[in-house]
Image (tube, rainbow, N blue to C red):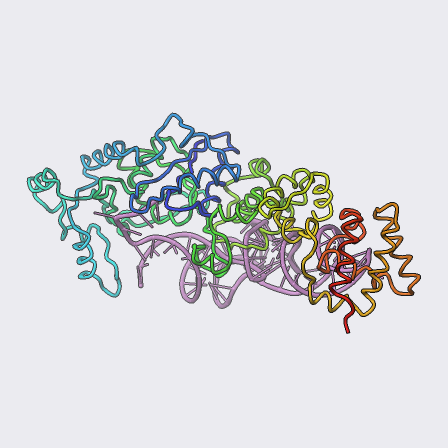
Length: 492
RNA sequence: GCCGCGUUCGUCUAGGGGUCUAGGACGCCGGCCUUUCACGCCGGUAACACGGGUUCAAAUCCCGUACGCGGUACCA
């Protein structure tokens, strides 16, 4: 079995594109098939130089390796459509000679005029098809001599598929079952543009056939194009591949998850953004796999190899699915918690560096141990847990109001003195010292614990106070406690 | 407008004629644990779009309506 992911290099790889790639990958690996990457760069006007590198990087980051494609080669190279122009020309000619396609010389303005003139309330946008083409300038309406003359004169023209009405095209979709279209609903699709490049429809059909693709797994937006493709396979005497159209990913607000739409909801849309925001690739992949598919039992955590094992295209749903950032974050937390401290350290390092924080391995391992259950992203260690690396510069005002009572300064100062006298500065010792002090002063331990936490971290939440103190160390604790006493003093 | 696809808790979904007083997960709300915050554990909230059929029996099959999404380019 052979499948392909065929992105167009018009921008950063979209999250929906990654899911399409993922399903193709899973299908190929599940069945011991081949996964082909093909770059569909036939639209020169929308071409973006950096896009292909981004696609490659994004796939690699996600762990989706391919068997044939750019940078890798393969038996069906080249894998850039822009380098395969002669191939498409050959088949366009074959279609022309078989009378299944024709030349059309109409300018965009002429087509626009036709649409305007023939528009009715029932049919606001007439197609270029069997009923209108007889009124247009093409090799079906012009004398053969005239067509030859125009072609020889280099007159701009396109090649259109000749679709005969009155028939019905039915194909089987692995996800949707039988789908039927009437040929009268299909326009005479442009196959070769006036710049000589093929459109998606021609290039796609030709390449899928030549590259021996057995299963076309792509987004649902292609469903209405499929009958055109089927017609072309037939006209060329080829067997169409199996089709599977994936449900679309929708914005939580409804509608396509477009760039604009997603930005408004605070949802990253390109794979690169997910990477930059610190999502774990395993989490994104797991989440994406479950957007439209499930294994049929109640397991939820699947890494790539487990997904391969469990995947089946029949279990892919058919209705659009809404993107849910909360669920993705949950997946991210799950993967963070499954990592060993050393794995997590590797993830955290780059963020620490970016924040200008330097620290040794042993200390970082202890911090990670304390914070692991409390973070959603690896980078939180460098931001939310910054107080492990630097003295707090501010104290949360609400926390101060709530926890720094009139006796706080005295208690904290007294505790600092006790700590200074301590020989061993471990979790048990600092706790014992605090409880003893509380007893002597006749106050609840919380009366000291809370202000101490505030003094040490600047915030009212975090890991177990005593474990935190042991990690921070005696010197740091004393310094921070005394500074807080000084800065916060006695509230009136 | 026309064509196509879809419709189970707010979201992702299980289910495919009786086992459904509809299960799980995220979220949310409570509780336990903990003198913090999380984790964890326990509990709760919440859905078969609507209307007709078929059947002894429908969330499940059929038809219609509504709604959503996609397509309707010399973009993919």
